Image 1 (tube, one colour):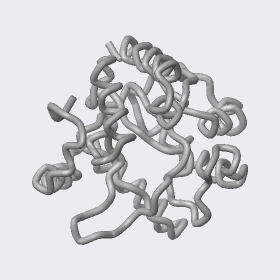
Image 2 (cartoon, helix red, strand yellow):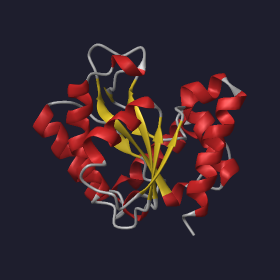
Image 3 (cartoon, one colour):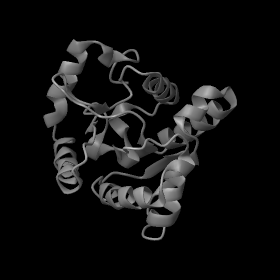
Image 4 (cartoon, helix red, strand yellow):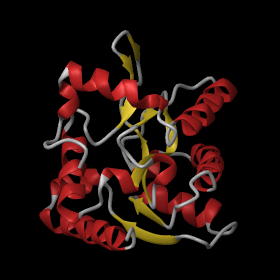
Length: 206
């Protein structure tokens, strides 16, 4: 992994250094695209993690929705990163480290990439309209990643999005259906399923 331990961005110096990397060539075009979504929708999106693969990604790890409001804090924008200082980020960091799905070969995205004013409590609370709108941008993203081979659908919302809005339009990617991080954190049995999916994706990156 890019750092030697999880929760690296609890250190302001590490976070500051990461933000300085946002101009990297593998990230900059994606940032420009993401900024266009904000202009179109008026909704703030997190930044891509420049330690992840960006345009060089072979795997896309797809989550459902944002559970906490995004901020435009003086310390800089929110990052969609396994190095964040949260339980979920730490879990995903350890899962990727253990399975060999390294940061330079993969990246994360959400079906609904902006914060919903009425935060869903369960996957079934995410409306079809929100999934449809997010999936339109997901389809754009898929074809901005020239090396992309594998998409991991982590949870019910990514599965719904893919089945209804993506699969009818393309079949060129290997799709691995698995569980979301919240369920995996709560159960070692479920975590084993996610680990198996990550291992499959890691094997396909070489």
